[in-house]
Length: 114
Image (cartoon, rainbow, N blue to C red; front, side, top):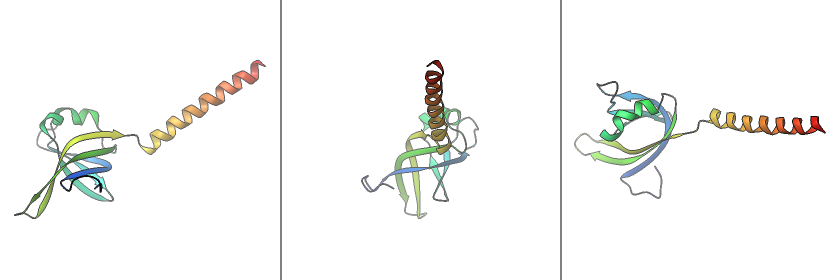
């Protein structure tokens, strides 16, 4: 959790492990792996129909939401209100490699034409 947010909010980054819910097309929650812990995070109704088509297992995501303490059960429930996909390390490396190849190709073309 971030130190500059109110105590009832959370901001987590992790790897999407999967979805939970009875309907495959409308998951009730997602499972996020953060520091080797599996954390279930409830999804709001407005996100349920689109989240499965936009996110894949293994994606790096950032999830921002609100936490609620269940005093009777002694459990903290996390409810998402924003989820964003983050570029994975391999995607970033691929983009860098493509840029390097393009620069190299331009240099080769310039030197061959000279």
